Image (tube, rainbow, N blue to C red; front, top):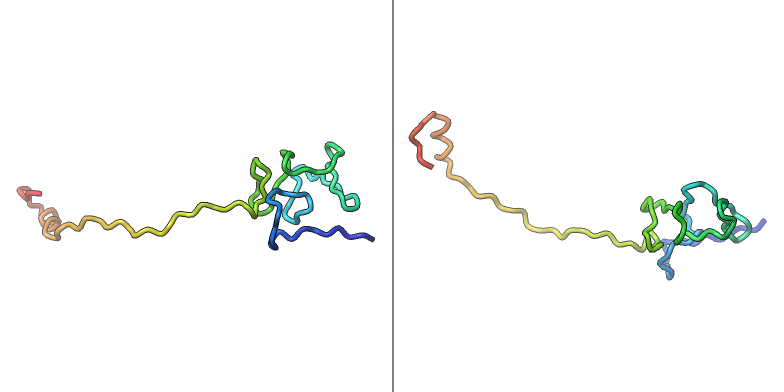
Length: 107
């Protein structure tokens, strides 16, 4: 029995595009057929090409980018840590008049 070697995407990956040999690749229609070292699409009968297939999905991102980029190659945008906004501090005597019911308190 001949085993097909899967690409380990956590190692240095040279090709940024998704391949059918990746262990995170899934066919949305579940029509991927393994024949020797080739991955055959059950719908078309050709070799599976995830960059052009609309049913190709990635386990990591749940989708493959429109350009066919691998989910591990896509960098997420993160916001930088900023200082929290300081609120305007109001004097305490402003609220004391409202609690007592002073009508002529000027703000």
